[in-house]
Amino acid sequence: MSKDILLAFDIGNTNIVVGVFRERKLLTNWRLETDKNKSADEYGMLLTQLFAYEHMDKDEVGDIIISTVVPSLTYTMQHLSAKYFGIRALVVAPGIKTGLVVKYDNPKALGSDRIVNAVAALAAYPGPLIIIDYGTATTIDAVSEKGEFLGGAIIPGIKVSSDALFEKTAKLPKVELEAPGQVICRNTIEGIQAGVVYGNMGVTEFIVGRMKKEMAAMTGSDKPVTVIATGGMSTMMAAETACIDVVDKMLTLNGLEIIYEKNKALRTQKLVSQGSGTYDE
Image (tube, rainbow, N blue to C red):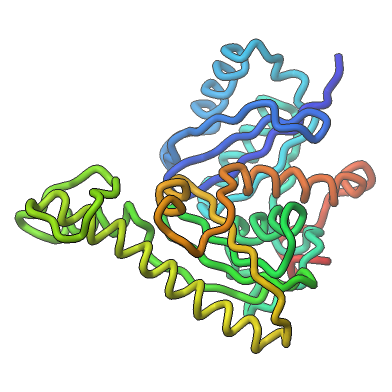
């Protein structure tokens, strides 16, 4: 039996996105709810059912790579990998080869999803780059054309902003996140939608504009910056945000596959060093 499938886990605070690759091509992907209380067996049974639904054989999985911003789930997914696939998963962490030069005060504090996005963006788009990931938190990161991760900004995610209004006020309702079409709204629901959605668009445009100026000053380059958006809300945000050039929903999964390829040779020789040092070139 061929064991040529790579399973990639992108574990976020709200969702776990699972990608199935064969011969460097993404065959399918699944979105699961992030639940810190779920056991390895519960996630394992979910994956077993998903493989069966897609008429795929989970025994063809030859390796696994994990990126997580939820530390408590790292062991759960490692246990799942060992029990259900017989594999010790590769975890994106300091010490892994990425090809990036990380100019961050403390690389250990940098979310692995931001590193993975930068690797994928550099492989697919002309640099310099600004990468916006609309997740539970929205991250906006700068990457030079030389492959330097320069840093970035973190703001509350769109859904977090909306939920905060509902949870912290007595009368404001929980609303669907969609653009109402105007900012002069005549009812509370559309007023919240306008404030949250268009407000985040305004924040995006301001930070991207300022980031471009700072990148030019830092790098001494006036080359045009490519702005890529990913994450659940990226399509809606890009529809009315002039500063976004490309929407790439599969950016993080593709980055995981690229990082796996950079470390695959080491997997056959010895365990990749993890948990110390920095993200390696």
